[in-house]
Length: 189
Image (cartoon, rainbow, N blue to C red; front, side, top):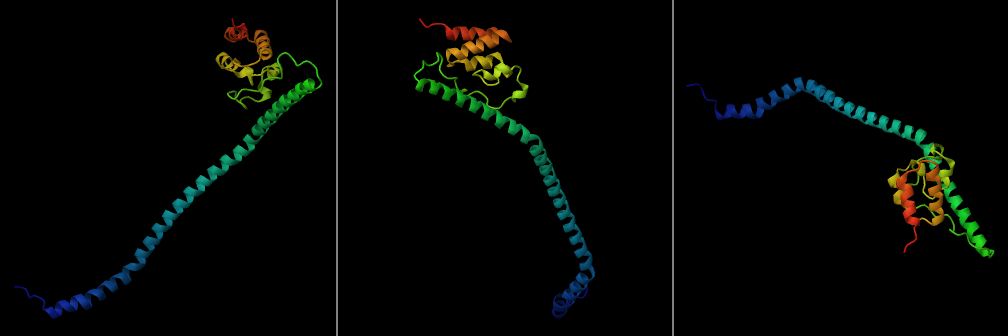
């Protein structure tokens, strides 16, 4: 039977030799573990930094592109909207001035304001097919399909319907549009 360590030997192993051995081991291996931990931590942080820098670079490029390319388009859209508002205002003032002077009001009244469902900034004026289309009650008329035009005809005054019918007959001649205008202008009875 091998000799069993006595209680004193066990206590010495646990309380003296074990801690001294652990301390010596840590003294010998700690610098290599520390370098391993530092290297690993540095790699993780470098990877995160590069990822954030890449995302910031992309955001910066998109922002620069948007400011360079988008600003002129926004400016044109705002200028177009202001010009349209100015034209409607001038027509309304002229109409009201005629009423105040005691003259007979025009048969169809002032030009109708654009309907709420009409897109406000769909096509810049430079892309419109015809300058006459800019004076129609339906905004961006030349860019709309026949079904889109038909949706916007309801509720327009007779004078505006006449202008749209004349323009349509002289330009595209779409039977759907012309038929709807004729239907809307028929006397009810």
